[in-house]
Amino acid sequence: MSATMKPVLLPVTAPLLSRTGWAAFLVALIVVCAVAPLLNLWVSAGSVFHLSDYGVGLVGRIMCYAICALAMDLIWGFSGILSLGHGLFFALGGYVMGMYLMRQIGEDGNYKSNLPDFMVFLDWKTLPWHWTFSDSFVATLFLILAVPGLVAFVFGYFAFRSRIKGVYFSIITQAMTFAAMLLFFRNETGFGGNNGFTDFKRILEIPIATPGMRMTLFVLTGITLLGFFLMARWLINSKFGRVLQAVRDAETRVMFSGYNPLGYKLTIWTISAMMCGVAGALYVPQVGIINPSEMSPANSIEIAIWAAVGGRATLIGPILGAFIVSGAKSWLTVAYPEFWLYFLGALFIGVTLFLPDGVVGLAKRIWSWRGAPAARQSTDSGAKP
Image (cartoon, rainbow, N blue to C red; front, side):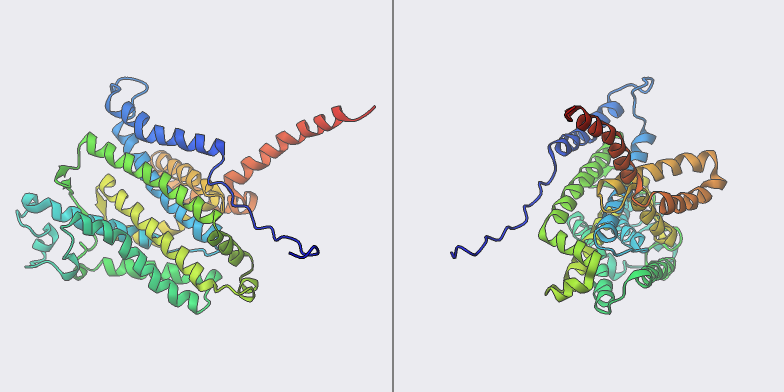
């Protein structure tokens, strides 16, 4: 090597989590897998430490929402792609799981038929073609990922190839989920029409309305959320994630550097949709129903609000945002049901104007303000007289 040549320094790969981060992750895993089951199944209902079945169901649903918020952060916070149609992918995963749960009812339905009750009511004689693999749990697990992923891939390919971005992309995604909602409302599509799927009995031949199954679904949801968080951290810390952030900040310059943004945007878009599909599949057996209202544009907008409130491009922020907003919704819809939508709108406007970095950004600023006086005091004490 010539003496005039300098070695090229490659960027150092950041650790997946810091020591403090791994400690917090371990605590969350213990709470999900050990503490919550103990408080619900073993602590008596009269104890102040008892976790009620309602609490288990509520936290389980919010963890499903948190997966969607995390998926939104990957495309909006780190890729600059604002989707207002992610409720569609959530609902598609839920419908795939709902179809399997409807087949599990068997002859325990009101009409004592192997066909779902709504098909008997509509005088259908056979299952539609798209119900072919709905009686297989293995096929259902595959389709939970494949159906939202395929829809997202096809839509994203044409949208990103046509260079549609910004507000135009957001409007198109909202139109897509609204059109799907209208389609699923129709009885002839074979998805239960307005009522959707409900009255589930069992999963894997195990009764679904038991404390043990309820807690099993809770634990699976928590583990899935934590697993997706680690996956998202790994993606963002990799070269793939750095290119995504470069595309977000200056897509034209990335193209001049020799990268094709289409593949990167399409990949993270499809991954995000599949995450929402998994969240929907975990959500349905816990709430006991899935219908086209899950595809409403308002639900997709709410996913974006979770990410904005918690803090975009932080990963942990959208998870916190889902818990904060959904927790407030659960309380306000009971205490002040007529004011909930006004509160949601005011929250989104307030965060946009006064907390552009969300709750996590506010916490970082407060931490820096508290650390600044200590740093000045340390500097002053070390100064010479």
